[in-house]
Picture 1 (spheres, rainbow, N blue to C red):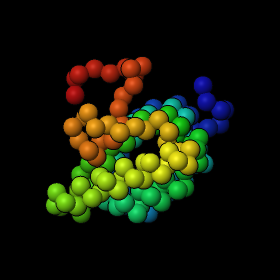
Picture 2: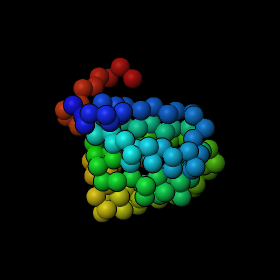
Picture 3: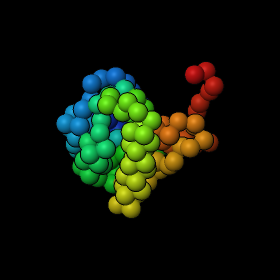
Picture 4: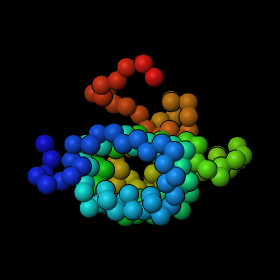
Amino acid sequence: GGVEGEKFSHLEELWLWNCEIDDGRLRKLGEVFAAHQCPRLRYLNLTKNRISVEGLSTFFDVLTPPSLSDLRLLSLEGQEGLDSREEQTEFDSSVRALRAAAHANGRLVKWKDGSRTGSPLYIGEKSDSDESSDEM
């Protein structure tokens, strides 16, 4: 169980796919995670929004080390404004650098590089203990 009164202590997955999340909204989401820790959140899907590298950096900065202590997967595919392959590659590289910086600051330590997924912006991997199937 979670700490009594923690609103999101049992949340394991959060899908915010195509929700018009921009950098300001992402910062607010980070503030919510910092205030109401999500120790069981493993999957955060932010696919098809309007998130920039700067917005993601700010999101990580507002998190505290225990905020998303079990986060393993973060999907950032299809962000608005990444029209060319070069822009997508640059975004991906920046996300990886932000992940490394977050690790260095004790944040998101279970978030790993998911290069085996075949999608550079779907960063993370399921652990062996995760219950999953091939139904997707």
